[in-house]
Length: 517
Image 1 (cartoon, rainbow, N blue to C red):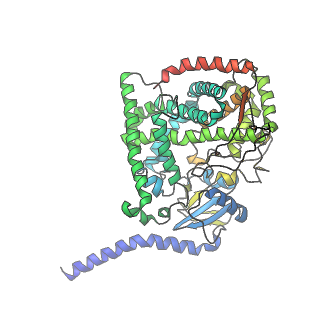
Image 2: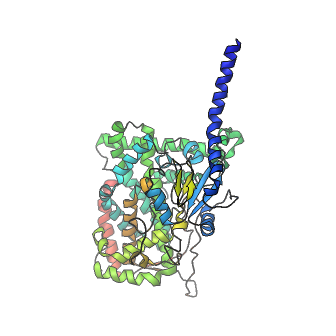
Image 3: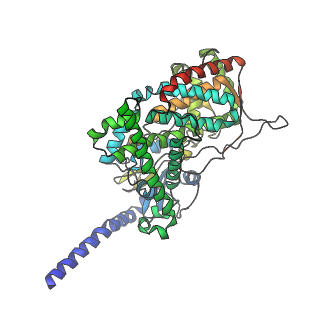
């Protein structure tokens, strides 16, 4: 081999090496140059914590609404106020609409197929177009008959076995999502195979996405360690194969019903009709169809569970006001309907306060990532930063919500300044706002109105007839957080209310036969 050729190879290797390390060196130099301009933050970070949102809240209290963390090689920004989140994620959405790299949840578990975690680009735009067309406000209103029918079933379940209210909430949420997505309802949440498999998949996903939990997120090279030496990879890779099998099987069933002409209008049918024009593979379509379950079941059922928790703790402070409004507007001979909601401002305020008081998406949903350097109020935010807007910090910020742990629906009736249109931030911001927000908010509002109309909900009693106190801070770990089990008293308001619930349930069951599996 000639000296010239050897020199050329050496030069090429050197260039390749420089190509790998130069961006890193440039990034480190830039951080060093702007160190005095970075947002304030702690010198060390905590890792492996089960509830990082509690720590984030402490940081926001100590350092302010914009906090800087250096988590491995990745700059991380923690936002602690609605205004800061709005200014960056909404007003400057062009810079903050991408996603950080999710090695555990996005790559190892999902093979880059989940649009929720996809970086800004062609794949995400196709995914977003599908989700928006399937769940935008006008389209989501076509799902209201299903939500109303399943809600009537929920009222009957609460009437018959109130102690199992958590199971009933999960069945309602799962059945709405599965019916809207695949055209088949869920009659028993504990035995339904679709619910069980999707639940297992979502549990693995949410546990994989907790910031700071896995070292591989800070040190990506760990991804390539063989599974035999990395037990944290084994279950994730097994779950990925289960997910692929599940999504393909569900779409095969949809295709079979479509071919037979027995498939009701549903999101999966819409996906098949749009697949060719968007150039998406069968697996991409399968994962897209699985999005509503992951995004909607736990959030809807968890929010309604938080409502019951609020009733058990604060019920006497707000339930009589809501029931007085319901009796005046709706009367006592029928359940509230979607058409009643515009005339029920206090009941809707109860729903908004539920979403504010104990947000299920405590971390603010999936983190954003910045695609360009930025300066906010004199603070330098580097390109490639992971941006987290934890709702536990934002919704409990005393500046926006005085006495934030108190449940006060009046917050959403009084005049006050808050960025956005909802008065809370439960559905996110900007181009990454939750596409199912209209479906989700409709479920929460309608069911809260009907529960308050039909039942007296409050603290359970002990053997001495005393109220059993509940812990309003006892919530689960994970990417989403819901109340841990708690006792609650749920009793019908009168025999007349029982009669209405039973009558409307019978009518609902007849209409729901079209969606039986």
